[in-house]
Amino acid sequence: MPGYGIPTAAKGLLPWIWAEQRLRKSHNYWISTTRPDGSPHTMIIWGLWLDGAFYFSTGKQSRKGRNLAKNPRCVIATEHAEQAVIVEGTVRITKDAGFRKKFNTLYEKKYKWDMSDFAEPVYAVRPRVAFGLYEKDFQGSATRWSF
View 1: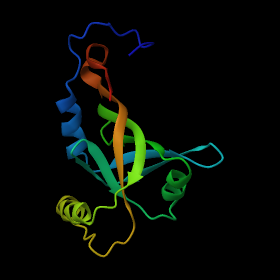
View 2: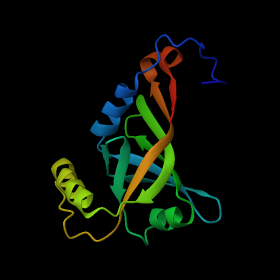
View 3: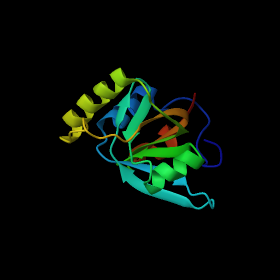
């Protein structure tokens, strides 16, 4: 991670499985999107890390839904900053009805929230780049993954 004064050796870097564990276990996530005027918008969301992507649902008319319709790039971050995982990527709306059923089942299990009657889209964010930061060993473990 250039610019942080961190050693360039690979020793101590976090494995991707470390990031995926935190992406799966996080309860709340931060999403940052960009308003049409270029100003940032950050909000808490619920979601699921499945098969190498982050999935969440939001209303098309919500601020984040409207932002993503204009600019599909976003940032997703886990809730615990002392063991942070930050994912930069681009959203796409999932259209697969079979996947939607799987999403609803897993979402209800995780959040105790029935999504079966929720008609809003499910978005998928595949990482373009991700960062892992472990506070207790920041200089030895700060990691960047590119996809």
